[in-house]
Length: 275
Image 1 (cartoon, rainbow, N blue to C red):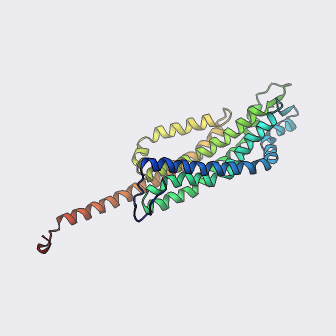
Image 2: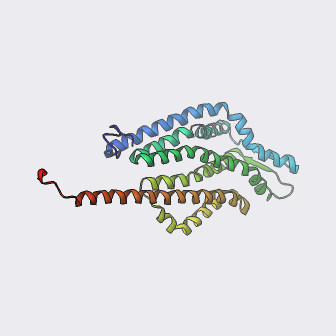
Image 3: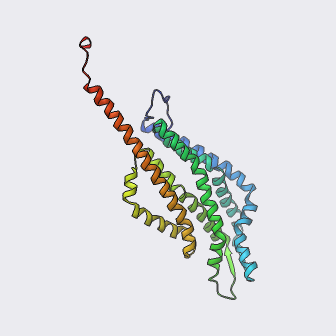
């Protein structure tokens, strides 16, 4: 929602629907270009990243003394997996750009003070997203150990590369996106779409949804992994709710002051010489 006019001539950031669509297209193009450039860099980082992602499986084989390896079932499978992992690396490398494009599309419609806060949360989006990915990476070895622990004695874990890498990449993206949910709540609150009281009203449902999301996104059925995902989400959710409530109070005071000014002006009698 970039402004076609200056902020002074268009303080509320109003735009026609056609301009909104054009701006959305431009933002998406810039985000896609950043991801594409990051993907190019991902090709150069593929081998060390692939070795790091598959290390938990290799460690299972080395520690337990049984066969555990990653299998490429087709001729073109290694190349396909290289492309997928490179795109994932490109998403990570370009996350400051596409997160900025997302928030730049939202923030022009906000007031000046709200824009400062929203831009601050845009800056927080990058470490939160990367923090979620890092947390998933830290949980990966224990998750692999738990899941492969169900393998019967004397059997081997010959894991298909397509299945394994898809599992790992979805896990990391799920954690990263989950850590952005509180930022989205604050962004919706800043635009006036989602008041803090509404979030508080449905806190039980929100708590349930967070736990369900943690159960679905976390690998395995162990409660510890689910807790590692749900606990930071609950903390971030609490911080987001607190900020939303503070912003609602600030908005209410500003509206009350504006109404008082309008009433005071309306009650003032017009001077005789101006009639």
